[in-house]
Image 1 (cartoon, rainbow, N blue to C red):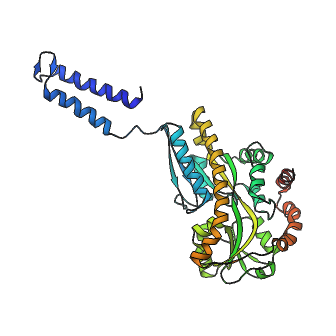
Image 2 (tube, rainbow, N blue to C red; image 1 turned 90 degrees about the vertical axis):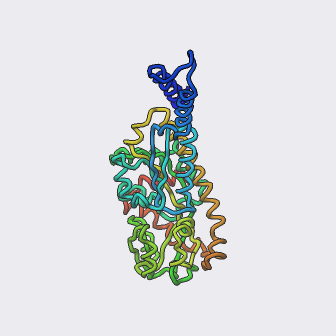
Image 3 (cartoon, one colour; image 1 turned 180 degrees about the vertical axis):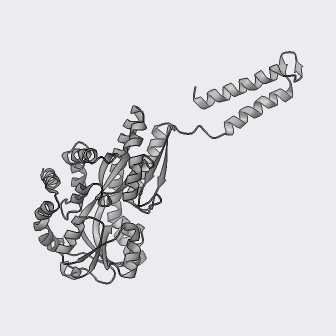
Length: 362
């Protein structure tokens, strides 16, 4: 019998016991109308009461506003974990950076005060410098290929599991996924080729790889956090930016960078990570459930990323007057591909580079 039904039964018996031990009027061995009413009222109150609190409450952080694959992943995990655990797990999703910026959230997760996060690997390079490899341009040619290379049974995933452990992050890696192509947008310049970017102040996240890539295109890198990007573009601190299409749309960056160039220079990699403290608290069956649901959610996020990439451009043009250009990617590849190996050497990413190139070529 479920715990709630047990309690209702026990409480009903307790009311009857109280009646038997009291001086309430009796009629033979039967309860009076008042006593029956008392039992009925107690039972009805218990039935109307909320169900028992879950055994585990998990808080998930994302940095972005919907629509976005990160929020789709988080919402999928909430739905499936609560349903498949029969209420033993409750999930609360905090999107749009409600719990803070990614580096601070990762620090909180090491203490177990935040349980899970879904975000871009770019924002984690302060804690995981090796993640910078994923911002190397044109290292993957499709989301399907990236999905295969990043699977949990593949060398690069196992490598980052080891990195998490060696760096003592206090985090457990659950999934690596793809959340859409990244493209360039500017405040006032239509981009038809690499030459149009020369001299522009380019917003970059705090990663050496990004700074090196855009410097190779003769741009001027400016480090700005995602949460400050809108204001940076609005005030001229930055004149150009790059992001996924869901990030560009969801954060309304088209308002301050209305010229969108579909460069597709990288496919954005996201990580789903969990506090090791929170993971260790789970019983074995719930650990397996969280792991399995994280894999399914990751696949769902990739499917949604493909959907957004195919649908958002038309909406940005028709609804927000975004000016879209489609530069020849080969012109960018001709500049950036030859520097990949040198970038890997300069940024101490040779091992990660070799693992990915080997897997991507299979």
